[in-house]
Length: 218
Image (cartoon, rainbow, N blue to C red; front, side, top):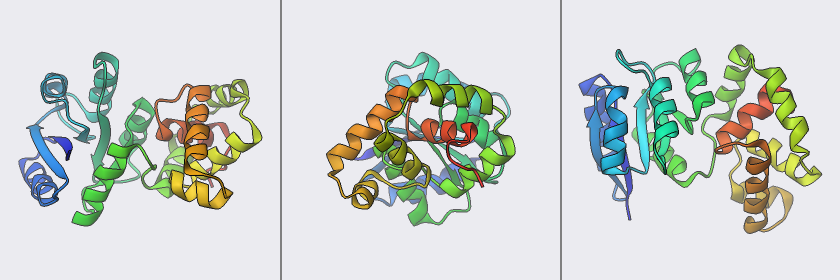
């Protein structure tokens, strides 16, 4: 089954470019488009895409509010990939904190765009971990709440090690190779880390790790 994608951007040329790139992939299908975040929820409910590629800045409802709305009202929400012009945009970080699964630069090469969609669909790896570190350093003002979450989580030594490797952007397979354990063991540790942190996905867990100081953002 192909990965299905909903494109949300107020610029028709951007949507056309993304559609052309993604539909050239045999395993990706664009199932719909919207020009503003306000149109996302009915489209998500009707089309049930695997991934929403969503512009972070739009005139009526931006990507932050649209992300919150989808996660709040859709029973089985899709993965959300924020599309942005500037990777150090505060809007990007707020969208990630709101629940977006990763972000993609509009200037990315076609192969990078397709790869990003696949990664987010799989829920396998955080995109651009170095950029997330910079964003956490600049905009991560939630350190005290995040620190309390990490303290309450009481991660085991191995879970803490897995979280640090997640923060470096390693996939489950890469973590397994680094720790010399099986992929299923890593998957179990990742699931446990997310559950203990109350995190929706890897991105949320990594943001908490950076904001709390558990992983040094620098």
